[in-house]
Image 1 (cartoon, rainbow, N blue to C red):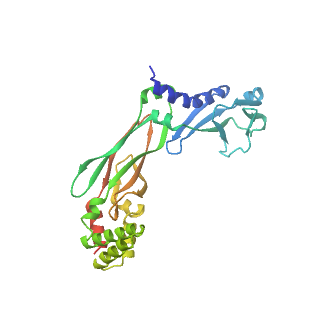
Image 2 (cartoon, rainbow, N blue to C red; image 1 turned 30 degrees about the vertical axis):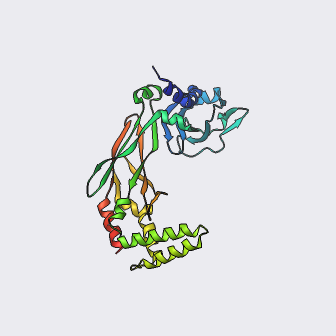
Image 3 (tube, rainbow, N blue to C red; image 1 turned 60 degrees about the horizontal axis):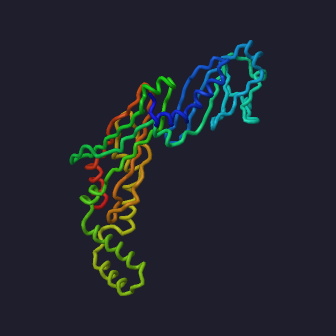
Length: 304
């Protein structure tokens, strides 16, 4: 028996089967059924068989518009060229004049619609990543995602692929900086932060005292601006991406620094990992690995 959650999800995916039934006279073959988890976009591709006798019998084809699905494309199955302006929406129906189609017995029709977020949550279970294994060399974060009740969905839809499933990982970098950056530099930037905070107030004596404390902290080899630029560089997605890897079937997606700082350094980096699930491979598991020793060595080298 289908539980309440599954029924709610099924309600929002019925347009796949509903749309297919409209084309039954043309013996539709389901070629692909794709959902993009990130964009919430659903897509179905049907191959229609339209011999001459059906072309004459169904010269005018009308498909009732169903919720949010639209017919976006039609392709000639013989030449694989797009048939422009073939379908149009009128009075709540998608309409096609079959007599104007190029001579062919096979056509590929694409239908698209948007899937509500909570419906997708009924389809896919994403386990929040957790730090499972730590060594001096690296940190490992466990990744896990799966289709809920895959066997049931296989009976309902037979073909289903969900792409761009994102498992976000919060990779801690605070320690990588704290063990590699000179204490004097940390102290100087801490005093700079305090001076900025005091400067926002109206107590001039506090401003003067803090300025005096700041001047008493010695400069190191580079200017303050250069050190800030170094921190920014080390926490750019492209740079940080060199120190993380993922197991198949995952791949690295967007990487961005946290907006939360511990002292002068970002607390963590947010790494998106993406994968694909389908009815043949309903689960995806693996590790994201952060090479923290190598990253810390690079921090130490740049702050010498």
